[in-house]
Image (cartoon, rainbow, N blue to C red; front, top):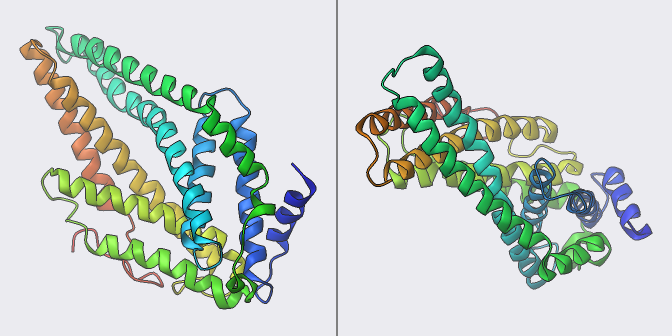
Length: 318
């Protein structure tokens, strides 16, 4: 890491409410670029890939949220590259998240002898083969992406990100004046998504799942933006910045649980499309699908969804 990047990282910690907002932006980008470079230098495997993806998402969110503080054309171009990398890395992460959700109950049912006709064992074999195949494909795509010239060019840009970020005159204004508006914009987008959600107990529906997954994405963006805006030193969306970050982190965990359950149920659905599967295998797949959809409902029903600032939360059943 060059000296300019090190100074930028120190600047994030030194950013004050009355200091320039650009200092906080540079420092946050430097902090995340260091995470990006650290984990991109490791072998292409979890958990390095998870942390690399997280850095991509955080930088992409910062660039999108701070459009008034950085050159928009520059930010859009870099943001597209980061999102593309995050998508490729996310496929392997999703495959790893789904596997235990499906195989653990099957192992339990086999041990209990719940399906003595071999339905659970055959289902496990079917799903194991499918999961292995899908994870292998995702890992191959991630490896190919991370050794290609496009990623090397991205890594070069990330290495000098904090030094090269083109700030606008707005970035010279104080943190307390600029950053709360940035964070509240991301928070309000999340709150809007929450207000538009179908009820947690609603029947399974692709459009409903898409709405919940979009709320998860918006919640992650609000969390990352709140992290960036901590140096504002003022209330953000009615909360102390540290409290808002903690609350959004809890929301992200809850919404991530329902996302993984949705992905697992979709995996079971794909397995059920396998030609000529035995009736008992189909029955066990149906039970697995039901179990994951119940997990979706539980996660959505218990998520502390914040539809309004300052702790006025949307009831999961209202």
